[in-house]
Length: 247
Image (cartoon, rainbow, N blue to C red; front, side, top):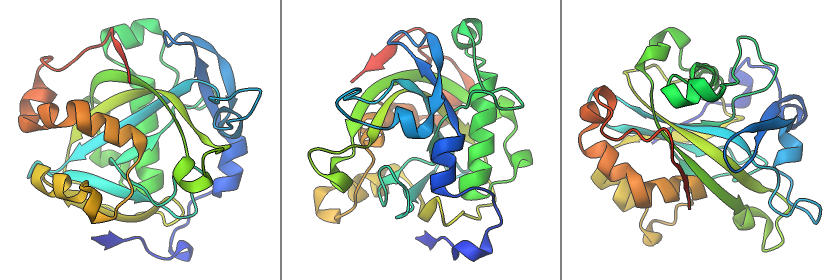
């Protein structure tokens, strides 16, 4: 299990607090139609006015190496939402007002192109894990489907948690051998695993914490997609562009 270097070893810009206010997430309705935009701080706040935060777009990247091992990360202990949990390779948000654009319109989603979301994925894989963009061409990413879920961060903040996630999550698969140099403000540790190793890590006796979105995907979809990863990436057998899975 690899650990992230000290924060001083990374020269990225923006602390967790700064990004909560500067990043503008894409706000959507239950059908994933864009209704506006709001700060990351605003969309993740759970309170009396918005008890489930504000529904917004996100993405989850599952990156596999040439040995078909999945790259996992443990979110940094300094993260405001879901710190210290293990999860898939990268989970973040396409942003409003970003250049190059990260907002996908209806036709882009319907065609499966989602170039904006893929650009956001490459940006965040670089920011969180230090993966060079040239190692992740956009055409290597496969958009499979969308997941609508809501989860308060009760593990960190208790039963009346004022932080959480309420997202329509775009699921992206990619296969590449990459260089990893994690940003310690984002990632505490990372590890490549096969299916058997992942199942062992997710047992209650392991003592490891897991993100709610990853648990949903692991319990309902992941093994089927992973069993023949090349088929998943090269065909549309597991692609479902029109359904938003609400779990």
